[in-house]
Amino acid sequence: MLGLAALVAACAVTGGAQAQSAPERITLTSLYWGNVTQNWVVPRGGEGVWTGRDGATKSFPVPEADFDRLRDIFRAYEGRPFECQRTITDGPYGRVIWSRPDQRDEQLNWDAGCVTGDADDVFRRLDEAESLLKALRDRG
Image (cartoon, rainbow, N blue to C red; front, side, top):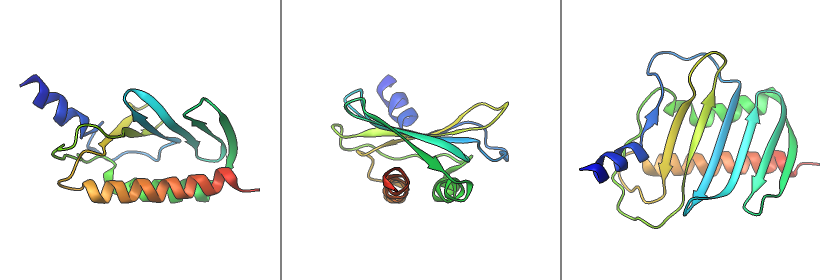
């Protein structure tokens, strides 16, 4: 029973379901066996920071328009649950976090072992977000 509760928690969006103000920061974290493989901290206007598996970091400018594009990628999951049935147990996982001033962070937890529900849509959006962020990081 405890395992089922942990599984449901691993594939859920946490935070309030009510209308949210615009986030000031979005963080994307990917992990494998408890180790961070990459982390993106992306503010709305300002300097984003990417951290790789080996701890290397790189700062990059984040124009407000590009932040808004990133937000639009995940907007469908703001304030609504993402649930899935995890069938593959040995894969990457992570989270998308929306941070808003004076509000509790909202979090989308994903797991590559999920194969039901909106899993394909979430993974497509993660790939799209990573492509956008890599382009911003590697620009110039």
